Length: 527
Image 1 (tube, helix red, strand yellow):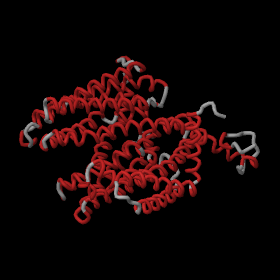
Image 2 (cartoon, rainbow, N blue to C red):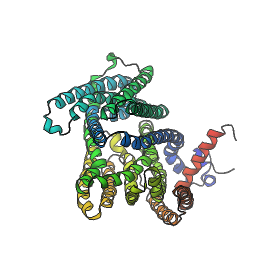
Image 3 (tube, rainbow, N blue to C red):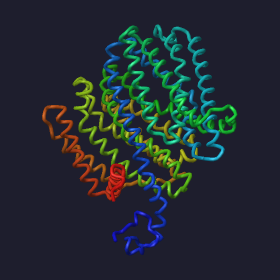
Image 4 (cartoon, rainbow, N blue to C red):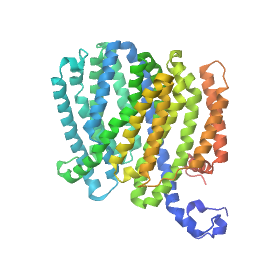
């Protein structure tokens, strides 16, 4: 009989299972059990998030050239200014409670029972207060502080979106904590395409200005909010009697430092654009942003999908099986994540010029030199959620703010240092280095709470496979961006897959497990 140690045998002698001792099998059993049970869930949730993100990204790719053609330059600028203001206001209006939802949901008992009403009613009150405060501030601001005519009106018009988006976050994160990834992805796609249709319809039919854009956006987001609110209320009736003042205070205490995290994270992600605008001008920002956004779209549907899907899973393992099982589960996930992220980075790096030519135009191709640096930084950023898992589990939000703020400060400083000498490439290098600082700081601080094994061998193998596949694929060219895209993709997958499967046993195990899950899903009755 073949060895079946993977199935946690307790009667096979060590010699038949290939283990040195039965105790070793039992010591590894919690992690293997968590991994075996969790891989199917991870694959399902990550697939749902990836598909949803890809469809939303497609809508963004469709809307970008349409908006830039239908809106004047001034209105397009107003639209972006108001959108940025809303993003910061919503971050403050949520008070970080949306992050507390996932953490407190798995505590069980009375906490889980009171969480839906406490979270939704609490965030509604805080969001309403933030909306009213913002409206008062905008109304009292002197004209010279606003600078642009019409900006005050747009800020007042869109103030209601602060409350709408705070409530949207409350509902979405409650469903996320429940593991309803399929609905969350479907909801995000429907909301995005509803907004796209309404915006284009309004701009084509009547108001080709920023006001028309935001009126259509408000209608779309309110309709979507009613839908998701109804879905949440079906399983979690919202009653004032279920509101817990004690739980609300605990969630605020956990979440308030996360407001700083979101603001610092915005600076970390967007600060480079401000520096380039200041030092190099708007045209350089456009060239840089085309390639940066390409990386962001791909990161969202791959690396970020994995890190998003694994978060509630390791929290569940932590609550049910404890520290050792969680550490071993995350260690195995880290190997798989590294292999996937380096493969994605290789595919994006080799195909960046072709993708930008197809999606944008040849005017933006010069910006693709930033892609290896930027996609590498994004891979590190997506891994932080795993490296700092202990800080999330122990609710050390102050420590989380510390490492994000440090990385944001490093990013701004490096941009001012490197951009004058290296142009947009200097900003891309600053992005990679600042995310490396983010990950290193998170790992150092996070080790005090949870030791996540770092797969150094997998890192070396994946990095070698990345370099080899990129070098060989870059030499292949036909003159057609479409054919080059297909050819280089096939070459990268073949070379990268061959190297990692040959040299990394962890990758081989993960591929076997994935193949088994796919086979069982497609042919459940097969022996």
